[in-house]
Length: 355
Image 1 (cartoon, helix red, strand yellow):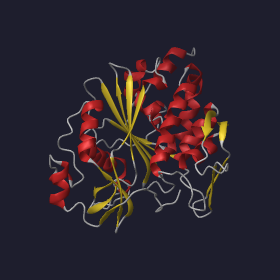
Image 2: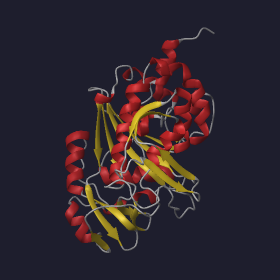
Image 3: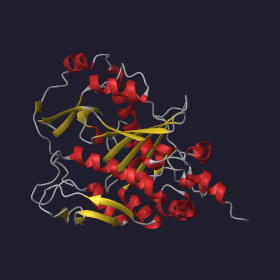
Image 4: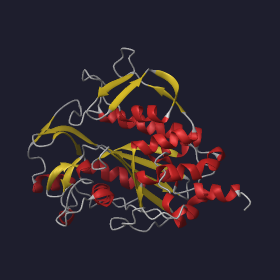
């Protein structure tokens, strides 16, 4: 059969949000459908059909045990304006998950009354409850899948920061997690393993690191996404798609289908980092006597942001149980006892999971 480059370009063009989110390496195309595999997650109980020219994709990067989410990004692509809005949600965001108030990253690992782990659909429900943005697709992936894709398509040039200001760059060792970060500061071409180190770093072994903890880490991840889009989302990527798909099949859970890939392919060709707008979930640092360091969402500011930039009615967003949504963010805090056990503080550092 004659190789058809144009068709491969169509297959590449999955929901743009899937390509750009999580460094674009989290490409949640229906890898399994393309290759006739059957291990793609088809659970869509917490998603809805895309409409009005918008495609909303929730990206979840999970830890080594595939239980908690280490990074959460909600990407919304507008086909009419050819722009994508990416909202990063701190993993320590405090809201009602399962049977109590805890961090949003626990939604993925929470075991329900049926004995099943919540997984990506539980995280979709929590994010929709928190933002009011209806989710069409989800992609659940690991850092290892990012490394595999980078190694398949080639290094990414990026300016590695020096958070401590000492010239050490990013250094951290944790034998328990099998995590070893050793990146010198400055502009360099990063391999897959080095990209993982870049994205996972929070602090060194002396508890020194980003001034604003996870918030600075989120900003770096967003900048990496833009760098990846400008350097790698081009025709040169097309020929490597089959190998990429096969290489990370076991790392992905998604409800994206081959039909979705074909449907949205035409929007990829002219997309650049200048088409991306990035946001971080508004809120306040606090310490929960039960959960440790947490990020307390500001529902009023979230509502304003979602309505202004994402174009959805966020009047009923809440941090409470799904069935007890209230219109007023301030009222919901007061009526639910949401602030119980909270101590608001200046400065933020996530020390629960280290790196």
